Amino acid sequence: MDCLFCSIIKGEIPSTKIYEDDYVYAFADIAPQAPFHAVIVPKEHIKSAAEINSQNSHLIAKVYEAVAEIAKRENLENGFRVVNNCGEDGGQTVGHIHFHLLARRNLAWPPG
Ligand code: AMP
Ligand code: ZN
Image 1 (spheres, rainbow, N blue to C red):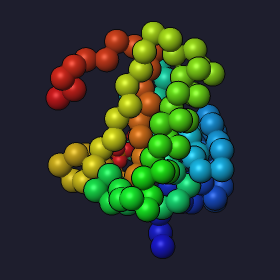
Image 2 (cartoon, protein in one colour; image 1 turned 90 degrees about the vertical axis):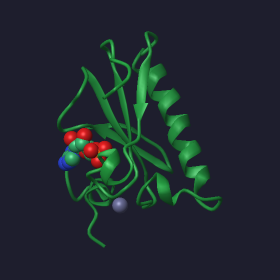
Image 3 (cartoon, protein in one colour; image 1 turned 180 degrees about the horizontal axis):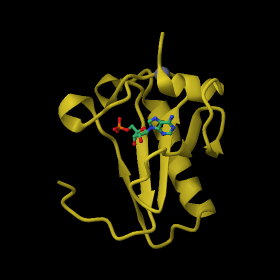
Image 4 (cartoon, rainbow, N blue to C red; image 1 turned 135 degrees about the vertical axis):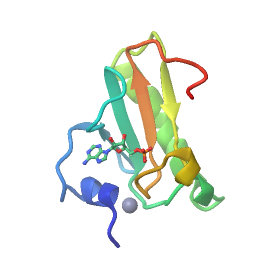
């Protein structure tokens, strides 16, 4: 299966690692939308948030454990935003579920 983020997780495509554990990999977004912009992915391929179920939801919990850990390590005490784009209308461009962790600027709400 051809998946950009699976290739990044395997190290076949280079990335700037921000965090890694047994379940999760996080790397710097190539087109950052904030001074701090990490992409956080479960290592197991899940297509999108629409594919989360009782068998794989523990991996999403691991992603959020990573969010808190990264926020601690990067001193994001002023706050941050986690974004998951799902499907065409949600603006998802890579078919491997991922969570944007954006920080170090005041983020507008609603996002538009
Ligand atoms: P989305 O639009 O929510 O699907 O997010 C995909 C994200 O992946 C975008 O923010 C891209 O900038 C980012 N991206 C695409 N290719 C790479 C890459 N090779 N390394 C790092 N980030 C990437
Ligand atoms: Zn994948």
